[in-house]
Image 1 (cartoon, helix red, strand yellow):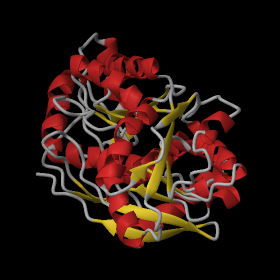
Image 2: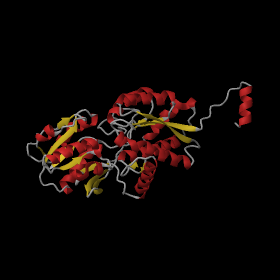
Image 3: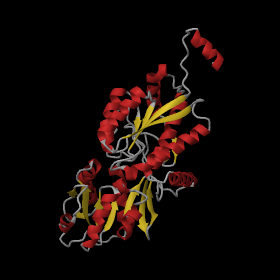
Length: 390
């Protein structure tokens, strides 16, 4: 309806057709708070993907628009975000929430509100199991750490097969990892020299915790926490004379980890579901991400795997909405949310994290890239193929 006819219709008191020109998605991210160091790139990656899709004509003739909510890294705010997106913004789906703890809370709300949520970082085991509306473009922490240990056994270069585990006791994922990291280490032939040792994130003196090693330097020191906590632990570990190799799961797989650790990080080895130099697609994404981050004053060494997933999630939604014929019509909102959920199970999309598809438990099956820091640079030590989705 053109502007003149629209004005005449209003003057005549006629009912006007609802015609949405946009497809609305919500973004629940951790731009501030304790996850900000890792979460700052999520918005950048999402914005890049949205701009690309809209420049190519959008989806079903409509542009994508993203409403954003910063949780401040507080889990209870993720539930607020889900409600705002579902009820106020009338979003078709949600990118996020960010952390596993946020997902635990928000997923329960999503089931009640009947809206899909797809986190780009939450990776604690079992989060989506038995959920109807929760999906993930992440990989299970336990599975990935097991793959890392296979590489350590074959290519790790550590003859002393003893280990210690340390974790932040007030972080959900850290505590979760600490319950099964020792079991996985022992199952792969590593002997624990002390039980898993926890400490508060804000602790400034870690010497009592490291002293428990009592001069018995483990061959590997596994840390289950964010990069900032890793740096504190490694500084104290080296101060007390231990030369253990640092290993870790996805939680501290930050491209800035080499910069954060400095000399204490040489030979540190960790697992990620994204490798920036894998192919032309990943290299192009990496360049776009770094260029856009620089424009925004964000200094990053590269895209985190959670950034790569955020980028791919936007394309997953675009693909699903295209296949489901989503219109964005407010009168069809409930039905189109159901159509999006149902179409997700048939997803088979080439992304920068690899082939994106979903298992019966709504989890993605992604590769494992084993990365080692050499001379302050990230190097690819090994890789493991993903499991089949179905």
